[in-house]
Length: 369
Image (cartoon, rainbow, N blue to C red; front, side, top):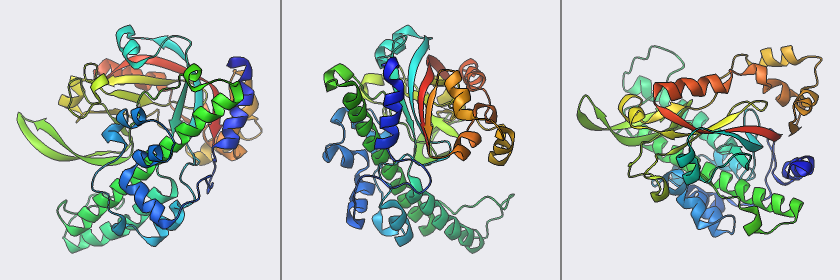
């Protein structure tokens, strides 16, 4: 595959819409959107985009129960109708990578990973649909704070009592956005497979591109955790964090029940990404959570200023990474120097015991919005 990497990146860039306001290949109606936000990734599989195994290997089976189309604004539907199956912009990406290092051979075997294997990592979410859901409910929550007499330490915070109508509507809307995101990644996964087979002229069996896991990010979920020896139901918010459930957890797919939840940690487009596993210590100390990514060192404005006069795409090619992007600005905002070194971040969570390293992947081809 490596000799064809430039061709492959071009085809993926062409086949999977990316960039701000990008529109997908699907022609949906509002009623289609309602079905998507009820069914999540299952909708995509039912429409020929993927396999049943993809759903089984997704967090929550690729869909959360309780999504309610009636609590979604018309504006959210308008923004989402053309964006299903699109990558988006910012730190979202599609990367062709190779497995550079294995840290846990037994776990890697279970996940189907081996040295020098070519992999694909997709990082995107619910696009403008989810963004509008957030915008709509921030306004509702701001009014709820006054209504319920809640005092917050920071003006950037917003909330409502969990059993209030405002919070229950929000949870139903957030589940709708999460399901939109699972469907979105499932569509992109399907088109990735098609693009690679078309470019390389190979069959599905020869391709062997199987899903390892699809894990949500930026989400709140009701979960059971042990607090001071007492089992309690909690709302766990993961923003800038990734779920990392331990071996034996009932929510894990059967195939991963003995090793723990796969945790996908993306780096910046010029360095590495990692696959880790959830641990018992994460359940005990961090509500079954670990890091989400590297985190920025520079703001987007600072990164653009630092990149002035440089050709980031050429620097990446010199490092052996072929990149296609909707614009130079995105490459400047997302260059490696704008982020912490993901290897250092992953070492911290590994050494802390809240997730354990299985494999390290290096990018060789990048599609950015």
